[in-house]
Amino acid sequence: MELSTGTKNFLIFIQEDWKLLLCLTVLFILYFHYTSSFDYFENKGIKFMKPVIFLGNLGPRVFGKKSFHELQIDIYKHFKGNPFGGFFEGHRPVLYIFDPDLIKSVMIRDFDHFTDRNTLGSREPKYISRSVLNLKGAEWKAVRSIMTPTFSSARLKNILPLIHSCADQMVDFLKLYENKDVDMKDCMGHFTLEVISVTAFGIKSDALTKENAEFVMIAEKFNYMPLYKRYFIFFVLIFVPGLFKYLNISFLNSKTMSKLNEILQVTKAERRVSSIKHNDFLQLMLDAAQKEKEQVKDKEELHLDDGTIDAQIIIFLLAGFETSSSLLSFAIHVLAIRPDLQEKLRKHVIEVTEGKEINYDLLTELDYLEAFLNETLRMYPPVAKVDRIVTKPYVLPGSSVSLEVGRMVSIPIYALHMDQEIYPDPQEFKPERFLKENGFRTSHLFLPFGAGPRVCIGLRFAMMSTKMAMVSLLKNFNFKICSKTQNPVQFDKRALLLKASKGLYVRVEKI
Image (cartoon, rainbow, N blue to C red; front, top):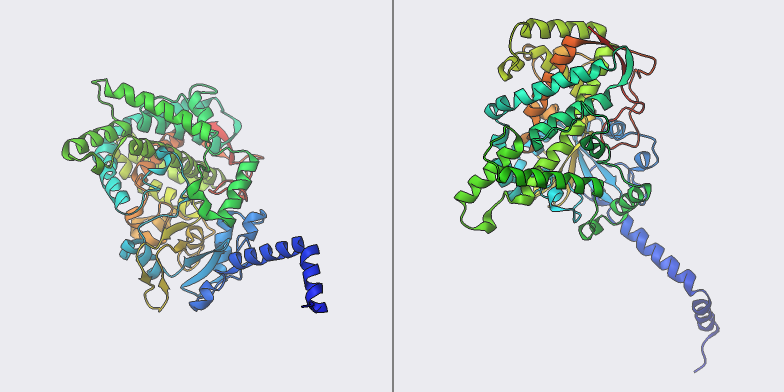
């Protein structure tokens, strides 16, 4: 049977142009895959930002046009007047929550439907993957409940003398920079590192006394990775996020983390053969683990194994180092650009503490200092947004919108903090808004540490150590603007956490 002319031409096309046909087929499959979720919000009747293939709504971040914090403002403005809205991270649908009552439902009231945080899910070492930040469900709850007493008022009171000693070292450290222009993020990073190394690891990092100290060198490379690795992680995150569970990959520098883990293993080994008890978090974790072993007969039911202890100590260092140094450096920046507030705060500190021993109870009396730090966190929260994963099917109150298990919801911390209706005159630095007599903000609308059962477990420790530092700084130094001071601060468009694009420089003067 002779083939028709049309059939012959088609077969010739297949033979000669199969490569083109294959490319077109692959492109069609990719297009279908990366746009298949783009009707998710439309099908649910939810207003959403129109996505672009591959990037979703992340274009401004990918091309360095917006910082992560600024992007939250854009999202918030886009959905102004809506209780929630749809956003695409690549081709992944993310539901943003804006309504205060819905935020309270997600973070607090209906927390059992949103127990987990969003994680990469990669095959990271146990000393990272087992941290309280990454654990999920019942396992997170068990470890969190064991750790909570570690941050009780009684335990913090015992640890405060260690922080006081670090604050004294910081004063001596800053005296070396008298009448000089200094980047406070770098200086406060040294202080924070010394505090955490002493209180968590139980070892002196010499961050405030030795140049090029080992701990400082390690800390400076926590987040360092070659450019090609950054692009690779971004590629996987946007295009094939499911691949992470098969990869041993992290945003953290593997060599640095291995070295940090080595230091921790040596310290733990020394503790276990020593009869001396230390007042630090590592000792408290080891004691808690020993207590659990005595109470639980089946080893399979133990929650605080060695890997889990390591993970808590290391995440305490990583999270605390960035967030606490950010809070302190932005607070000092405000002191420099607002000399009136600096003088008012100094008088407050002297009135409360003059002639008294600095202890935990006295620090709690510094209400204006706490308000000042809270206002700093409102205007400069280290983290731009908080995420939760749906762990039980959920219907948003007041609507017919249902959320399936595995979906992600996000709450734009920075945008809420800069909302005129929640915080009048949000661009103005007003510590008074956080004084109790003026109506302290409800927890679900002030979110630098998160809220609800998964609120940052180290919140009180962070505030205590920051207050101790501020008391020492205000009593010994005056901070002024200099030629390198940025006002207003421009945010780094490449950083994930809040970072000033050109540092936080001030002039340091001894009082």
